[in-house]
Length: 298
Image (cartoon, rainbow, N blue to C red):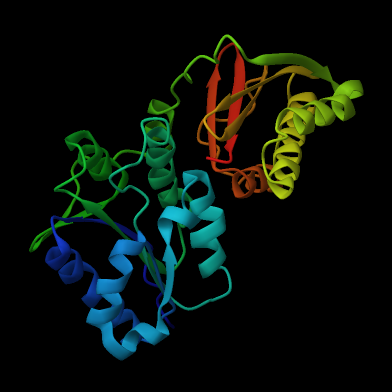
């Protein structure tokens, strides 16, 4: 009888290119040697040195620039990790670096929720995900959260079980934080099932500066969120729209609490679609209702 190795989720703290390569190259090469599918999803600056270190083995590895594919943290599990591992029954290896210097405070809670929920999303699968963290450039609280979201932490020659590891749902709840208030110049429109078509026109007209395909994506995402409010909350909600730089921001809020703060898109096709379409998705749920805010064009 064949035994299936359990899923492993490990954090790798590195401090320069040499320690990054020391921690990742052997991990990747072992996967190639074992005929395991291997994905490397890291910022582009880390891809070149790793390719060079791997030599000919790099041809058997799938590389993705995480700053593009994972710009929206909520897109990483369904759109990067699951998309790669879904087509194989073999044990897989993935290097995923979702938290890099330059991530904004707005993106950070979604990054922590993503890392926590990997443990739930891949439970029972045969594979390992190694998550590098630039310990020389990231703030201390980021490394503390990495210890909470990864059962195993590798730091130099030390590979230890993290004594700070926290239940994924509990940690995700901690980062269910209120969103920054909308600006005073926002547009605000209540909606019901009878006004969805009008709401879609409003979004399309408001986001006119986006490329046509972006505008269509935003309309689709907002329609999905509004439909969710109608079906699962009070049958009505409020749409708010404003601009931040080159980005269109749309927020849908309702009085329902059925959308859990740990929502990553894995529990329904609709929110998977929203995360795949948008550059960032932030959610806050409280006793008074649920707010989902999406950004596109950032």
